[in-house]
Image 1 (tube, one colour):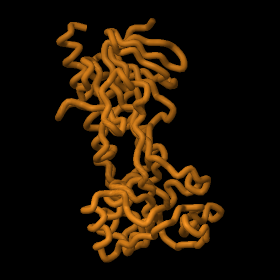
Image 2 (tube, rainbow, N blue to C red):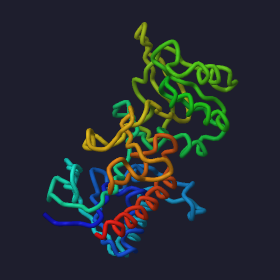
Image 3 (cartoon, rainbow, N blue to C red):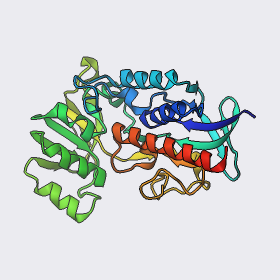
Length: 310
């Protein structure tokens, strides 16, 4: 099997930043792209909060430029999916949908996907009024009316953030009380421009035919009655799913599935395995944070190899 000094799983901001640093250090990294080369930013229309782009930049373009930068220093890319790993012994074994590799170090940057409702209209309007990140997109809805879908802590945190700049925030929840803590629930209900829509689920986002968001069709969970609610945007806040299943039983994960790292570092409980980006960050989930973690993982991998004499 081919032996690699550094294998990076994932090609989002964390993975590509790790690639830039390890490539410049002469470690000849190999990036396994995964199912979505470029990560979640490839589905983001406008990015205005990544440093260095005062006029903003489209997500796909940002990721393409990061990829070019990594390639400039000699990073190699494999357009495959990782289907399994063996981390019991070093070198580690990485099985992909193509070749099987061996790696002296592994940087895991497989990310986390926002859970979606699974509606065709959601896909059609994603990035065109439907989002899963208030921190990323609240700016575009200043002074406007928005919906937040969900009833847990993530939804109420999104609502609180949006309430600072939006005209109104209505939280669509399938039950008649929130699942979040009493503190968050009370804070949401006490915020003047935040209100709940109880016992309701989204049947359809409107209007895919027009190519722009105009509201949502709701179904009452008790009566089945349908109604249309007008809004300027919607934020789906039903949680995230980190891409860590292949590491189950091999790398420590928290109860939500995120990889656990040692405080202040990207080191996991497996020496030589480092985690960066959303796969280990359930709190911030920002591209700039992921990039910083990718840098840290690269520096740790370099130090690990120097210490091990590899």
